[in-house]
Amino acid sequence: MSIGTNQQPEKKGIAAFRVPHVYVLLFFILIFVAILTYLIPAGEFVRVKDAGTGRMIIDPLSYHFVDTGQPAKFFDLFMAIPRGIAAAVDVMFMVVLCIAGMEIINRTGAMQSGVTRLMKAMRGKDTALLVIAMIAFGVLGGFVGWAEGILMFVPLMTALCLALGYDAILAMGITVVTATAGFTTGPTNIYTQGVAQGLLKLPLFSAMNFRIVTWVIILIPTMWYMLRYAKKIKKDPTKSAVYGEKLAISTVTLDEDSVLTTRHKLVLVTMVVGLFLAVWGCMKWGWYMKEIGAVITASGVIAGIIAGRKLNDIAEDYAAGAKLIIGAGLTIGMARGVLVIMENAKIIDSVIFYLASAVQHLPTALTAVGIYGVQLIISLFIASASGQAVTTIPILGPVAELAGSTQQVAVLAFQYGDGFTNMLTPTAATLWAALAMTGGIPITKYWKFVWPLMLIWFAFGAIFVTVANFMHLGPF
Figure 1 (cartoon, one colour):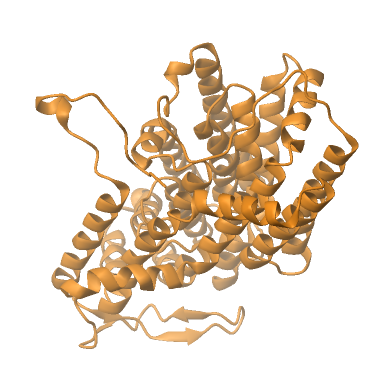
Figure 2: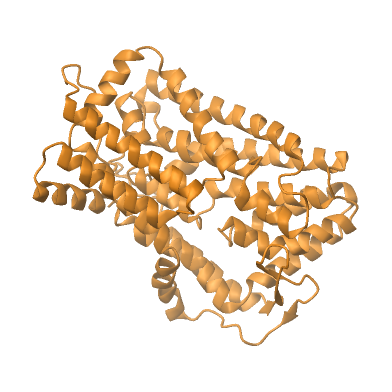
């Protein structure tokens, strides 16, 4: 699958510069981090079990240098790739299985007929449809705490957006980017807010009113941004951020003459039931990425049988869908490999220690913004929200309190610092998975599309923590 390449006429001078292939970009990041392992001393905090949550957390006063860190050698750069793949295997397989299962459904013709029928019923109401979708994904991100789980909806939304005359980047914006906005400000996000408040012994989901207000505020510009882009490319398709790109994805086109047969209806019901079951399983039975992939695969196979396709044809459809996405596995693995190098060199705790020490010397009025900035930097290296919480909150919570702010403000700064970067950093597996599921969108094209929105998010994050700091937001 071609990711990050773009065929351009031959140019000279500055215009002749070609954006590096995504593998080249990630390998240079690996090299940069490898160099850091020689510049940053190895150190670590002592991990202890938190009595309240049962999680292993750091003792903020226990940082010490160690001589067991292994600075990255030349061969380690290449070993980081398979190790990164092993560490990110759940995300990779969910992506492959979801795309493969949805490809079976796509080739039954049911989605084409169903989308055509939907468009006839909502002719001229595209905007309303997009708004409803974004609100739904914002709710899933903010109140259910879904990040990777949203990926299962990406193929469906991509097919819908392409059929409506939009593009794949808009589909990613409506699903994953909007859900991330909700996830970051999440009023009841158990994976960020819940973990962080539990570690600091704050009442679970406290300061709810403040978080609901910020959730609404961040969703408004996000939705406006997506609708503005949708209007622009609907008017002039050449304005699309991926115009001319050959994306590796099966499209669904509108066919006014297509008939929604009984088989088609049953296939669509099967797809909806599968998605609902995946959501229900995650919420009630503790399912996650493996189970999501299995459910979508099962839905695809059942749908293929209902559509009357032969077993060999279903198998070929499944393989074709997997082939569209399998190349993204290397991308996800290389992104995760950055953390592998830092873990082996034992410099992650050192980075946290030095950044936290810098925050301690800031004026009280700037403490909240300083903690927010620290979390933004740390999230470049620790992609897991709960992993970042147990690593940083035991340090930065007390730092905030000692500096005259509150631990509740530290939780907010952690949420915003962790969440916003998920849609920007090249080390985030979820970002790469979403780019792959929308056809292999080059990350440079995506960055060009999303950077103005990211600036809006970062600015609002700074405003939110500053306001919370002046409010002395509690409980403390």
